Length: 513
RNA sequence: CGCGGGGUAGAGCAGUUGGCAGCUCGUCGGGCCCAUAACCCGGAGGUCGUCGGUUCGAAUCCGACCCCCGCAACCA
Picture 1 (cartoon, chains in turn yellow, brown):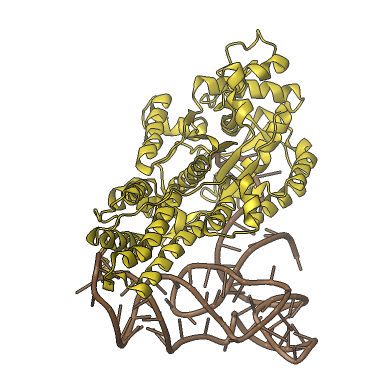
Picture 2 (cartoon, chains in turn purple, cyan):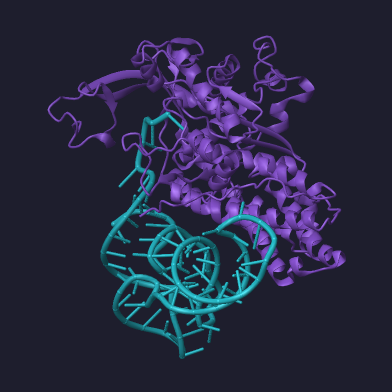
């Protein structure tokens, strides 16, 4: 089967933080899992680089805008190695192909009659030098500059007929009861759409804000950043490609747009796919983008997963509070696998969760050092000391189709795990592995193989436990790839040897209050 | 009466066909001694937000109220 997964593209106005890392790692975990069960995977991420904030930030830093973006793209790109990400596509919205795709997408929406020009009023606070929306105002004034009169700026922009898609969106939701996960978020977007939709502006005056993709056929306007950015989910697949342009554009008009081989068109192979995003992106991904796809005549996304936020010590992370957590620092301190483990195990997939070093270290010691690490050490040591040779089997990975047949008869360890993974319950899937390891400890305590004399007897106890560890090791791969690999190597030898400890216990001498 | 989520042991959480209130961490006691001061067993600790109702019986159903947190449109 084909499996396409994409994260949202982080906006390059700030350094990567732990929230980005969590989103990438969850997506990576799913990508690795699907590869494991035999799917062909396309995994996309990248950076969102247009818009006013970027333009202003670069200007303030005295840098060329693209040069500024290059720096940030490199910072986000560096997460690949640091976090062990396995994406095969890193798109930047300043890539030439993406720019062309956004313009092609625009034309399709225009052809559907969904783009129109409208005079548009913006309230502008001279004190802040910022546009203000009504919801930001107090008594019709800027709360920061109550004595300054607001200026009214009239600007003519292009608008997208979002309102036209209320019914189609509600139909989409109705016909796809699993379209948005979790269900709370699905309800949220449903009621938002039910309340009625207003068209949104999709362009800016180029004279005021030139850092955007030119609107086709109108040099005075550039696209509003959201309109261009969302298109990345298909442009990264090579859209618009040969197969599409034949009927939509006419071959001569855009013959240079096709990036993919006619017979191996990634867009055709992989779209529609699974999208993941943070809860701040709910509206854009599950409503705006879906309506844009409908307008352009493309299939809507397969499913959207909406993840929760991470707080730091119970507080919202922010630069001004100085409590942001840098994922690179975590990796440097604890290693990539432990970092991934925390973000997949302690951080709940869909609800908000809290990060603290105390929680991190507690979890690390309890489940990695004392749990799986210690178990591997005690079993491998007993096997080596007693000179016991084993012949363990690789786990048999089964895809979802075959699984259905098996579920009836054997509600096994693996089936259970598979089920949790298909529900995106990463934390609970890991829980099944941890439970298995704990069961092994209980089993060993009961049998006491270290008291036995006969090699036969000892082997009878240890071999099944070693097999369990190997099974765990295989299933650990999506979460902790390095550890998984080490364990598989160690427990696939005929004579298993003790080796180095996987997760040295952390000394938690300084206790949190 | 804007919409939604939540209030269960010191902390974090599970618990809807209503039936002796569970898990992880921490804590206390015991055991073991193969292992990373690890592992195993047991104890203590909760008026399940408040009040009222239905019921033989409610964390679980109904009503009222209190508190916390999201969303309430152009925010990338």
